Every structure is written in C-alpha cells, then in structure tokens.
Length: 136
Figure 1: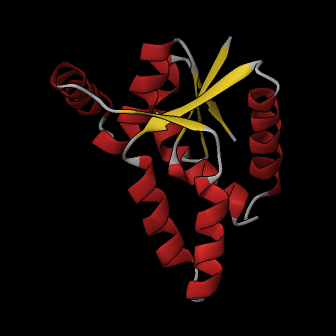
Figure 2: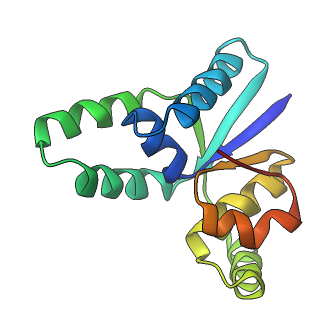
C-alpha cells in the first residue's frame, strides 16, 4: 500500500487554494486514501505548524476556524517520534543543513517506506538526493 507523508506547506497551499497544482495532488492522494489504496501520515508536529500557518495566512479568524475544520477532517495518521528517531533526525538535519521540522517529515517517509509530499522548494533542493520525496 502506498504511504504519503505531508508537511504543512503542501496542506496549507491546498486547503487555502493558494496553488492549484497542490490542491489537485492533495485531492488525488486523499482520493486514494479514501479508496484504501494509500495511507496518509505526518508527524504530530503538523497540527501546530498548520495552525500557525493559518494564523499568519489569514486575517479573518472565522474563516481560519473553517479552514481548521477542513484540516481536522483529513484522514491523517499522526506519528510520534521516539528518542532514537529524534537523534537520527537531528543528525540528518545537520548533514542537509535543514530544519529539524522539515527533516522530520522526510525521515518519517523513509521510515515508513513512503513518499514525502512538500511544497518547500528549499528543503526539496537540499534533500532530493535522499529520494522518497516529491515537490509540488
């Protein structure tokens, strides 16, 4: 079964309709999830990162709450890292010269044998050599 790992960048762009390509890809993936052909994952950190992205993308708090509800309905399995995972993520973030946050999503995809889906071009450029990543 396919496994996809999402970061906040792709979900924010898709749900806020800021990028048509991201919205199409996310819809396509969640269609696969709905038909049991794939599973969606992310780290437990995604919840706070997404909420923060909404906070600083929207001035209308009522609309922000509607966006939050759309996000909360997504069938995402949340993963919590253990100490060994965090040590590996920290090492890898130094090797790639990337944030621990971004690196953790990619690490999770590799750990699960899945694909990391992102709209973060800077991270993608630094980490694409590791594989298991798609830039939208």
